[in-house]
Figure (tube, one colour):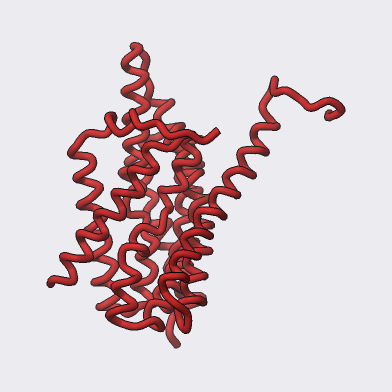
Length: 115
Length: 153
C-alpha cells in the first residue's frame, strides 16, 4: 500500500512537471515533444529496479518501446484528424485511444509475447 | 526560435493542475498494478500510455479559444489546429521515447542504472529536438514569401 501511495505521488509530480514544461515552451510544436515525455517511466523505473531487479525492468522497457510506437501511430492519427476535420480535441484524443491499444498490443503480439 | 512563455502558467486554472497530478499519479499506479497482474511484458506497454496527452491537447484548444475570444473572435478552429500541431510534436517525441526505451532495455542489465537512465533521457531529448528542428527547417524553406539565399532557386 505504501508503495502504491509513493508511486502515485512520484508519478503525479513527474507527470505534472513535464506538463508544465510543455505549457511554457514555444513554439507549440516543440512543446508537443513533452506530450510524449517518458514521465511514467522516469517516475517508476528506479522503484521497479529496486523491487524486481534489472532484468524485470529491462523486459518492461522492451514493451515500453512497443507502446511508444503505438503512441506514435496514435499521435499521427490525432494530428491528421484534427487538421483535416477539426473535431473537438477531447473527443478526438479519447476517441482515437483504441488506436494506441490496437497498435501497441498488435506489436506486443507480434514481437514480445511469451511463447 | 525556442522561447519560454511563463504567462501560460496563469492561463491554466488551479483545478487543471490538480487534475493532471491526479491523472498522472493514477496512471503510474495503474501501470504498476497491470505489471503486477499480467507481468512486465504487458505492464511495460503502459509505461508509454498517452496518459495526459488528451488533457494537455484539450487545454491547448481551450487556451487558444480564450485568447481569440478576448478579441471577439471564435477561436474554435484555431484551437483545434493548435492541438493538431501539438500532436505532431508529440509524434516526434514518441520516436525519442522509443529510443529511450530501447536504451533502458539494452543498458539496464549489467550497467549502472543511474547512468543508463540519464543517457536515455538525454537521448530522448536530443533525438526529439533534432527531429523537430529537421522537420521545422523543411517547412520553413517551403513557406511562400520566405527569403531565399543568393543563388538558390
